[in-house]
Image (tube, rainbow over all chains, first blue to last red; front, side, top):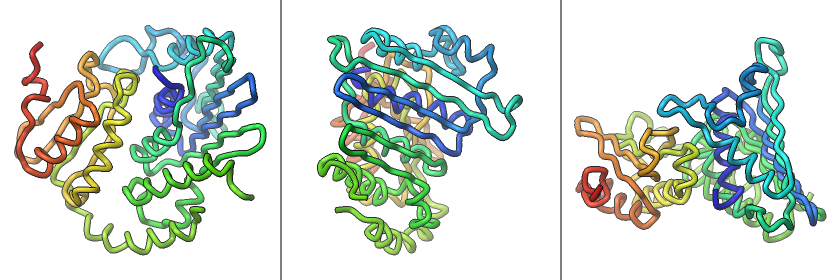
Length: 186
Length: 123
């Protein structure tokens, strides 16, 4: 992947496919580190499945036998000296509190660091594709935070779909403005 | 600064349109958004489709949606066009520029852009 923002889109897809009603995407940056956490309340995975997820020859897809999403992210993290950890609670074992968390840590100043790129189109693309599930996005910098909670938007919009073009455009501008002005005024 | 009040205004404006739109959507445009598609550049293709469909006022008859791996990863980004009573059209190796032409010529004008289809490629 050219940018980490594309990995975010790719990995968050898994959450939606796991039946998550809420997918949290959190990026936290310090001068040296970038930590990307994607947490969902989907069905979770059994221990056996969990062991295999970073193996490129494990996949849920039916069109071919390889799945590159998590292995790619793992490679991108590890090539900077960082790491990827996946934890999961399967719904069978944890009926009320299940889901998966993918946490990856990158050393930003390493020469093999994949640039983050623009996260905004990844967020709007996720919402466009899955307007009926919720996303909580936070991008934490040392001195400000950019955030978006679709649950908040939903209470305003009522039955107007989140995926409609006008709404997506608003979300895009809303996030762009936060990045430009150094975060939301709280 | 963008505010939730502005979103409120969008909602008020959209309300009637939403009711109008229900039950229509004759053309379905599907973009492959699995790892293979995303890595090949599907995100800007999808965004261009969404934007152009709206810019050309086609939202009443065209819906743009996402799917997983279509199975021809080497031809990604792949865009499929489904229209009732017609054969599926598969556009391959798409770019935002090609997507613009598909909206203009195919979705709006009704004429398939043969040079971008799977069958139209020199393989």
